Length: 281
Image (cartoon, rainbow, N blue to C red; front, side):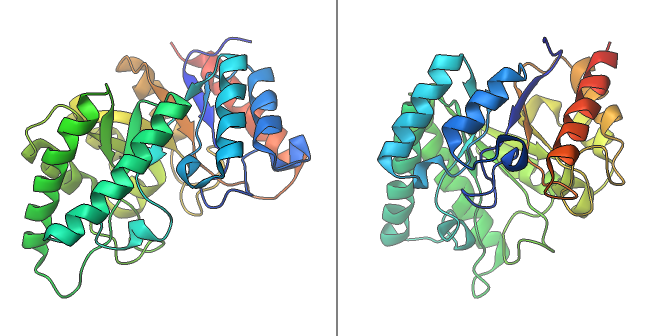
């Protein structure tokens, strides 16, 4: 079936063994997940930790996406461990060398997957003044933007929920936007994650409209709990209507969990999304 927006379910955003449709597929194998995702008519797949997978799995995933004609969502720069450290905010040559290594790893993964966007997350250093860390991050982003732009990619900052991801530098969407603008580079953009923004800032529709020129990736999950879009305090239909109204052409990454690990719940979520998508003008 056809969809009005280009949805991309995940292959495991909290860990590689927790893909979105584990119960429906009966397997966590990424290639089996991709085949199921394609059978539903979705446009793409999000595999944020693709760069951390064994090379054999990377090749299988890239081949499966090509076989099914699916687009690739954003790839994270770094590992689940390194993004909790001051990867982008620590000054000095050693810190820059560490960042360069992680960035080149993300670039190599993006090339292999044919992904166009690299997600940027970074921890903070409690011993360093916050403004100094932000200045260092802006300088590092400006430097890195030149590298990724030469390959047609963008860096996308992702402010996160301080309650669930502690000790991260970016936790408010507007501040992330100010940092992106301060780099002065078109290749530094933003990820609008509905659960993170709702948990820290609220006013989802207003923040989306005010900063639409910077938003390159939309990720949907409800709040609290990052559960399926139909369960929670966020009016997700209104979010999708606004995304459609604003002319979004990128992937809407389905980066959520389920209220229960059950194939019936997964099917209910798919049906909810199909009904809402069909109603979009």
